[in-house]
Image (cartoon, rainbow, N blue to C red; front, side, top):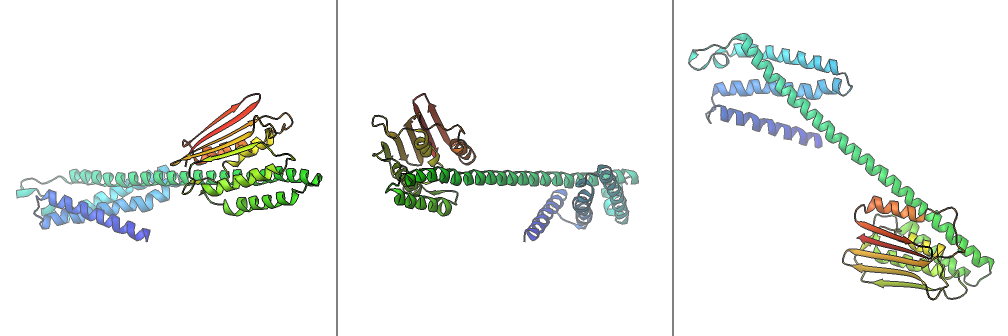
Length: 336
């Protein structure tokens, strides 16, 4: 279908061009001489255009045989010039002889003029070929970049599940080791969380309300680790309904707070604030650092989420991280 559209478009454009030249060349009076000059000779130039565009350029230019390409073009110009001259002398009185028969164009002058016009149409087809190749290359380049970004995002997202699962299983192992009654509840929470991560988050955007529910489940799972009631403050301001967000983009900040923060200090609770206004989101996680939860490996969570934000939101987000000796504060401003 695309080929037929392209042929129809080219035919329409050439028909318009020929008609305009015929009309302007005769001041609106289309006569037999006009038809001969602009149709017969116009058709020759159009044929030249497509011989170069469809045969010579793909055969030589695309294969970087530049000398052969230039030679083939030169031969095509010479042949077309002689064909035009032959037709011109066939229609001698119409083409060669000027109006009133007072001047006869020299044969070589006409050959030079015909060759020049042929060169012009070959130049047009070559320019079109270069433009089309440039646009195709840009399209391919864009597709490759998109495929690379998609592959990188898939890789980054694939790291989230094992990273989260590894930490959660460690927590559940601690509960099981202590023979805590909370162990079955922790396993159930983990099951709900993993269901969301594996089945519901495999899209570009998810409802913000689903992502909030996922955070709530994660926080509840983390609370089960502690014998005493942990000091966690989760505050939501605004209406999340109708808003969408990239899945699993907020969890790393919360996970980092529980992993490296102190959740037993009543004066400095882990604070998670989510403000939703119109199409903007403000997400803040503040935690007091714990000297007991050091991670020598450095972790991949925050680096992962920062890279995902760069790829997905680009200039539509701002991340501020204030890392002091005692307090870790993350602030994320996001255009939904």
